Length: 365
Image (cartoon, rainbow, N blue to C red; front, side):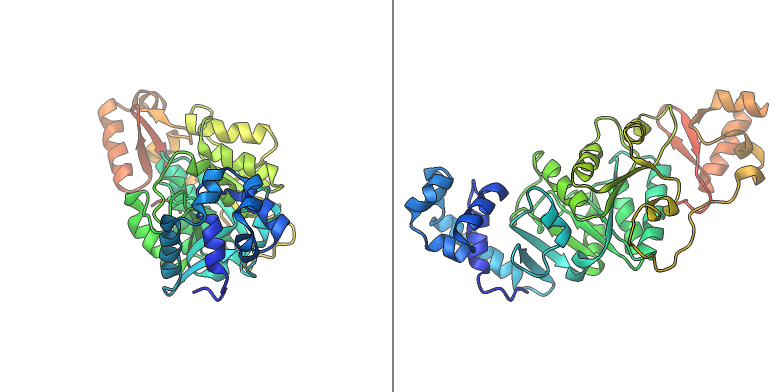
């Protein structure tokens, strides 16, 4: 719940169509807090926006939207945090266009903790999701809060890992905070609302729109001390988040992958341009100066030299059955039978195009 008696004024300005972060900040610099802005003659505000925007300030529809938001904020565990609040996340004040207010649901204290963003492909491989979840779990155990965007694939895996550790997780939404998107993440969304934090700059009821997600990405990186990209194609939205992180002065990390995988191309491009190559949680922690981890398990894995049978011939890149037949000196029927056993045991994942990839021990889902 919100103690700010002037919250209605903040909402009235923020919910006015056409008043974005830049206009809001110009008004604040010129006139002071929202209550003072709204007390001004509408003619004084006209130079800051269009006549239609100024007229909308006093519309019945806007008054209803403000009332709805105030009612939402009165519910336990619901918060609307303004730029003037002590709980407003300090890192966001460093970015170019911090939102005037944020809708939050869950553990509001997570906004004050050191955080790491973990993002990546929605169409991730099983190994990619396992890597994201394992790294997030270990980094959360050190006390870092894991920030991501609640998309399918890498984002969801990062949130699951974050929830497993002391740092927990923050999900930054590209919709209104009361909109569950994507629907397949409904259970995860409910769990984050209970044990982590949901966060959005968009008004209640805002539907998923293409333009919302690039804007959301700047908050994912802005909240964090660094951004780790796990599996991303060259055209991935995750690269937008990584670029925002670099522009905001945050550390950028990327996990390398197979040179044959399209989902490694984005990560490799980031590494070529200066991102830190990550193989373990230690690689991230050594770059976050000033952060003191609280004790954690290493993410380094035991040597794969003890693998026997077909696994000993698979390597770590995706491989087809014909290649495995050649390497192992086995028939196609034998290889297929072994692959099925390994897949059922969680040691191998089937990929599109008839390819197979090993899953590392300790990273199986």
